[in-house]
Image 1 (cartoon, one colour):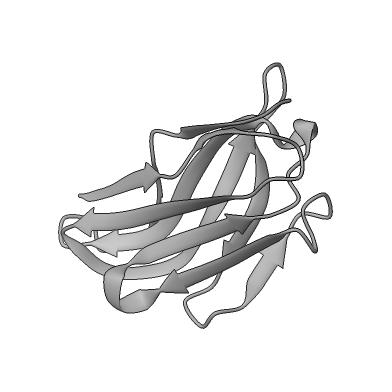
Image 2 (cartoon, rainbow, N blue to C red; image 1 turned 180 degrees about the vertical axis):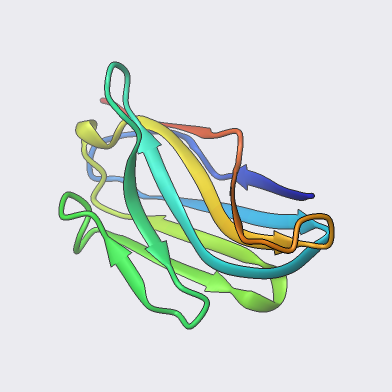
Length: 121
Protein backbone atom coordinates (compact mmCIF):
# COMPACT_ATOMS: atom_id res chain seq x y z
CA UNK A 1 0.00 0.00 0.00
CA UNK A 2 2.34 2.70 1.30
CA UNK A 3 6.03 2.05 1.83
CA UNK A 4 8.39 4.33 3.72
CA UNK A 5 12.13 4.17 3.06
CA UNK A 6 14.46 5.96 5.47
CA UNK A 7 18.07 6.99 5.00
CA UNK A 8 20.71 9.12 6.68
CA UNK A 9 21.35 7.51 10.04
CA UNK A 10 24.80 6.75 11.36
CA UNK A 11 27.43 7.45 13.98
CA UNK A 12 28.27 11.02 14.91
CA UNK A 13 30.17 12.74 17.70
CA UNK A 14 28.40 14.92 20.25
CA UNK A 15 27.77 18.34 18.78
CA UNK A 16 27.64 16.96 15.26
CA UNK A 17 24.85 16.90 12.70
CA UNK A 18 22.91 14.35 10.68
CA UNK A 19 20.11 14.62 8.16
CA UNK A 20 17.45 11.93 7.90
CA UNK A 21 15.27 11.44 4.84
CA UNK A 22 12.12 9.39 4.36
CA UNK A 23 10.35 8.86 1.06
CA UNK A 24 6.84 7.47 0.82
CA UNK A 25 5.90 5.41 -2.22
CA UNK A 26 3.29 2.93 -3.39
CA UNK A 27 -0.35 3.40 -4.24
CA UNK A 28 -0.59 6.71 -2.41
CA UNK A 29 -3.69 8.84 -2.68
CA UNK A 30 -2.94 11.44 -0.05
CA UNK A 31 -0.36 11.99 2.71
CA UNK A 32 -1.38 14.02 5.73
CA UNK A 33 1.03 14.40 8.63
CA UNK A 34 4.53 12.97 8.33
CA UNK A 35 6.96 12.68 11.17
CA UNK A 36 9.85 11.10 12.99
CA UNK A 37 9.59 9.03 16.13
CA UNK A 38 12.49 7.59 18.06
CA UNK A 39 13.03 4.72 20.44
CA UNK A 40 16.05 4.45 22.70
CA UNK A 41 17.03 1.12 24.28
CA UNK A 42 14.69 0.26 27.13
CA UNK A 43 12.39 3.20 26.44
CA UNK A 44 9.08 3.72 24.71
CA UNK A 45 8.83 5.13 21.23
CA UNK A 46 8.33 8.89 21.36
CA UNK A 47 7.62 11.67 18.92
CA UNK A 48 10.66 13.72 17.91
CA UNK A 49 8.95 15.94 15.35
CA UNK A 50 6.14 15.92 12.84
CA UNK A 51 4.81 18.22 10.16
CA UNK A 52 1.39 18.65 8.59
CA UNK A 53 0.78 18.70 4.87
CA UNK A 54 0.44 22.46 5.23
CA UNK A 55 3.92 22.72 6.71
CA UNK A 56 3.14 23.25 10.40
CA UNK A 57 5.78 21.54 12.55
CA UNK A 58 5.60 20.14 16.06
CA UNK A 59 8.68 19.31 18.12
CA UNK A 60 9.35 17.44 21.32
CA UNK A 61 10.71 19.78 23.98
CA UNK A 62 13.95 17.80 24.05
CA UNK A 63 14.78 18.62 20.41
CA UNK A 64 13.44 22.17 20.06
CA UNK A 65 16.03 24.55 18.72
CA UNK A 66 18.27 21.70 17.52
CA UNK A 67 16.14 19.69 15.07
CA UNK A 68 14.31 21.01 12.01
CA UNK A 69 11.67 19.03 10.16
CA UNK A 70 10.67 19.80 6.58
CA UNK A 71 8.90 18.07 3.72
CA UNK A 72 8.56 18.06 -0.04
CA UNK A 73 4.93 17.29 -0.81
CA UNK A 74 5.61 16.73 -4.50
CA UNK A 75 8.03 13.94 -3.58
CA UNK A 76 6.12 12.68 -0.51
CA UNK A 77 9.38 13.04 1.37
CA UNK A 78 10.10 14.27 4.88
CA UNK A 79 13.46 15.37 6.25
CA UNK A 80 14.87 15.79 9.74
CA UNK A 81 17.93 17.99 10.12
CA UNK A 82 19.53 17.22 13.47
CA UNK A 83 22.13 19.64 14.80
CA UNK A 84 23.99 19.89 18.11
CA UNK A 85 23.41 16.20 18.67
CA UNK A 86 23.65 14.83 22.18
CA UNK A 87 24.40 11.37 23.50
CA UNK A 88 20.79 11.17 24.65
CA UNK A 89 19.60 11.52 21.04
CA UNK A 90 20.91 8.01 20.40
CA UNK A 91 17.97 5.90 19.23
CA UNK A 92 16.36 4.14 16.32
CA UNK A 93 14.49 6.77 14.36
CA UNK A 94 11.26 5.72 12.65
CA UNK A 95 9.50 7.58 9.86
CA UNK A 96 5.73 7.82 10.12
CA UNK A 97 3.11 8.89 7.60
CA UNK A 98 -0.63 9.28 8.07
CA UNK A 99 -1.84 8.47 4.59
CA UNK A 100 -4.54 6.98 2.40
CA UNK A 101 -3.95 4.63 -0.50
CA UNK A 102 -5.81 3.20 -3.47
CA UNK A 103 -6.21 -0.06 -1.55
CA UNK A 104 -7.37 1.59 1.68
CA UNK A 105 -9.16 4.93 1.28
CA UNK A 106 -9.19 5.53 5.02
CA UNK A 107 -6.19 7.26 6.54
CA UNK A 108 -3.85 4.92 8.39
CA UNK A 109 -0.48 5.12 10.07
CA UNK A 110 2.43 3.74 8.09
CA UNK A 111 5.92 3.14 9.48
CA UNK A 112 9.39 2.80 8.11
CA UNK A 113 11.77 0.09 9.32
CA UNK A 114 13.88 2.52 11.29
CA UNK A 115 17.37 3.94 11.01
CA UNK A 116 19.94 3.91 13.81
CA UNK A 117 21.37 7.19 15.05
CA UNK A 118 24.26 6.85 17.48
CA UNK A 119 25.84 9.88 19.14
CA UNK A 120 29.09 8.94 20.81
CA UNK A 121 32.63 10.16 21.24
